[in-house]
Length: 200
Image 1 (cartoon, helix red, strand yellow):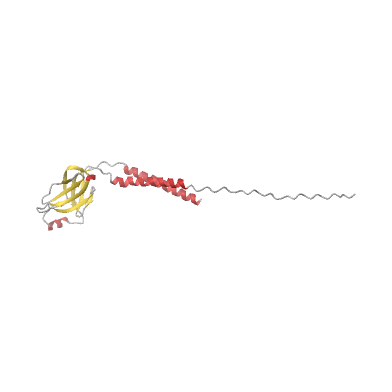
Image 2 (cartoon, rainbow, N blue to C red):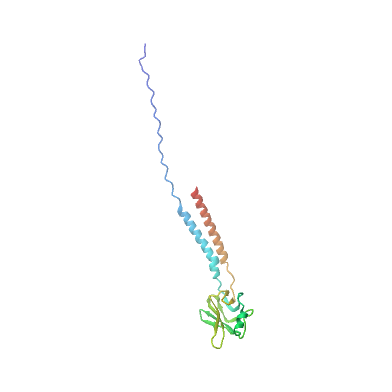
């Protein structure tokens, strides 16, 4: 007996299609924290340098009790004075409150230096100008002058030394240097971390 049943075809399997996954958008680079940290550390660095050097140089609020002049190393005052008459030197000090004239050294050469004591102590910060005159019968001759003198200042012919009480140094320079070092270190670390984040 013949079997008329035909074999059933095997079902055709269709390949499974994997779902398409869209990668999430890349997160933007965090610029703001790096910029903020770099700005803060740079401000700390600049503030430390100003405190350590610029403000430290202007911190001398002492007084001037006496003023000494001496010949500059590149000028032979003896030869200069021999051409003229033996000078009669005196000083005129200009301050915010007015002018102070010192006594006159009659017929006295500079030699190793001349020192004038002021009648009253004057704050160094108040000294605006210092002039050296040679007293003459006719008209006094100005020999040298300096503006805004410091403790040790060179004029055209003389070296000026303003002596007096100097207050003890504060720790501003130490604090300023510490701030500058901390600010510089943080700024350097921030830059290195920023470069590393860019590379990676």
